[in-house]
Amino acid sequence: MRDSTFAWLVLAASVLAEVGGTIALRYADGFTRILPSVLSGLCYSAAIWLMAIAVRHMEVGLTYAVWAGSGTALTAVFGLLWFGESVSFLRLAGLCFIVLGVIALNLSAR
Image: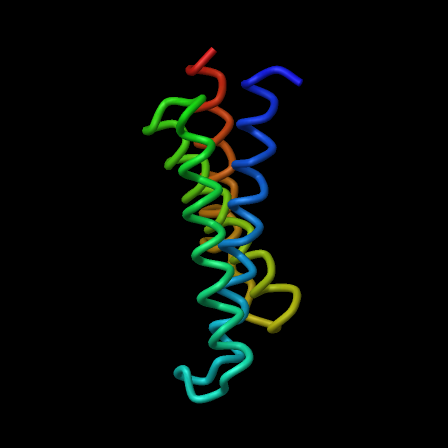
């Protein structure tokens, strides 16, 4: 497997871990429930560790921008679908802009 393919897979795993940590935060109830609180900490730790591996093979700015943008968009989608958060034109437009920004960063890095 090429280094760049490996780095993108590790970055994707980092995004998923970050989103998992954020969802666990919702269930942690202000860190008063032990299992979701521990899960949140473990997921965030894994996300940072995996991103640290990814930046060995990718530009730091690109890595962080893709991580933050993808995590934000995915978390917002989970909020809409899983937690029944409100859908508005501005929220959907914002998600589209995040996705377009991540695509533009990927294209400019090549």
